[in-house]
Length: 215
Image 1 (tube, rainbow, N blue to C red):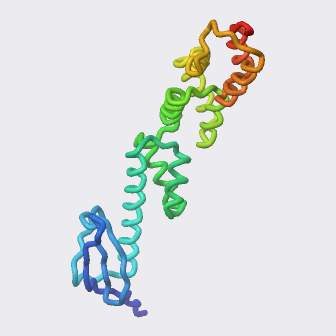
Image 2: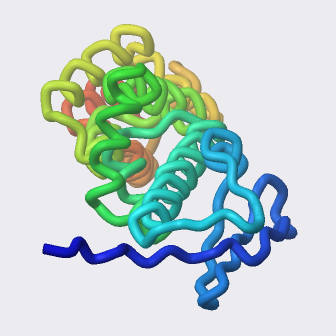
Image 3: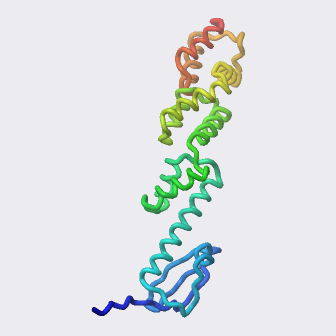
């Protein structure tokens, strides 16, 4: 039985793209695909080379893997990311789930993605910049679909570092309310609502406000 000969396509031209580090490969059958510098170096290609359909797909897939890694490292270059955020951002960029999921596992295994470290860094930043209380912080952490145990441990850790009473007093001082400041019932209600919006519990707020004499 005769084996069917696989078609091979000649590389007619290789052009550099405007985007640095990328090349466009043009085949004699009119097909065009791009490859990154990483792929070009690891699998050199020259005008006049012949490629089978299978080899073409290998180049295309290798380039896709290179591009998704580049996109992930670029995102990590700005700040830490949770696994869920990284997955969402990569899929928003058009990468398929079957490529995203293995990369998330790879980044996690290399220590580039760590939800516990992300949660602590995120929580500390929110407390330092906005003096958020536990209720609001839990809500913001939950957006990243973190494991409930990580959220619980993070909240415990950060409010040991930043005691809630100190945070409440900091917020009050920014509103020119000192420990001996007298507050009318109307003012107390206004401050109560403000601190609730910041994410503190009713009990904690009342504990602080009850220390202020009624004006």
